[in-house]
Length: 483
Image (cartoon, rainbow, N blue to C red):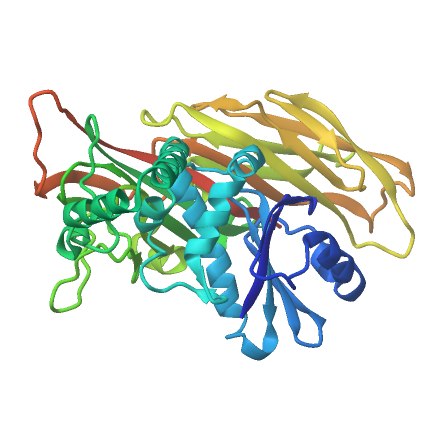
């Protein structure tokens, strides 16, 4: 049973709290308890969605979920005697993170957005929770939530209208009040009129100035390569793909999206409830048919196993994600130099690489017990800048915000020993390189949207236009090359 919810920033400063009862503790009091009983929850959440939980009392457990998308921590205090287990709580927190993104139609939530909409977020939590449990009566659909918690302008109009009606009710005679109530009942919609065609679509007919339907395909790839002489071999790898849709269509349209998987096996994807499944229960990515919710929603998620894909089609191992990496050690007259080179492919659909950064890790080969003090000196750098880390043996090659495709950046450096210099049995080598970057215009696996069609249910007027399109983005998750 849930007792309270909290949202904090990455430094655990309170942004929002929702208390289900008078006995639920404020975050200030709860935080004091967390610091003393479960300090492990104070640790940095890292770069991935982070889950953890701990006991903070005899019958109390605290759950923590870190959203990498929004850089926010979601906390839940629950009763262990009436709890369904960690998975239930973590799933709910993850869903709330996604519901807020869909409700505000954002790719990322800012702290300012949450603070300025404190009242509406409280109402959203109120819609999603009933008697301390998730509300499974259809309120977890974002369009249902939007009906119950309207936009700020609509909410203010509703409050003003209610206040005006109350004022009139006080002033009118009792007989007149009864007459108004009867008129309101007679004008009220029937249950059939209030019922939507599908539960995830608003029961009110959508009215958009133009009809718009956009598909966003995002792929995140995780790969680990091992360098053997001049070749790279894949240790493990996979691609995680999501297909988000932004739908602003009038009426109740039936939509078809056709994905071309380019021979990739996307396994059994996770589908939104709106996707129609045939009688034989087989899903075909080449014909995804659905009646879309109004606004942003996640159509499907899929995964590509690169280990399996390699055996089937022979992927070029050093070019997943448009950038291939090569590095060498023991260069120069004294064998104390190293060099990294990147080959950024020239692809007509991708104009630039965004936020490119390399993390370098140096290790002492054949180390004896004596410590070696050294630093990294850069001899040649064609792009960006190099920064030594406070920790010895680490550094970052940081590029500009945007790096043009079709370039070959090179970084060459050497090891400067401050004490315990090199000898025949102890040499400093560049051991591991991790890459981080993203780009727009192409998916890592090559999967793309072949067609977007409106099959039926959409009426386009003389002054109404139909806009549709697809956008692709690729980003790295864990991308590591090591000796």
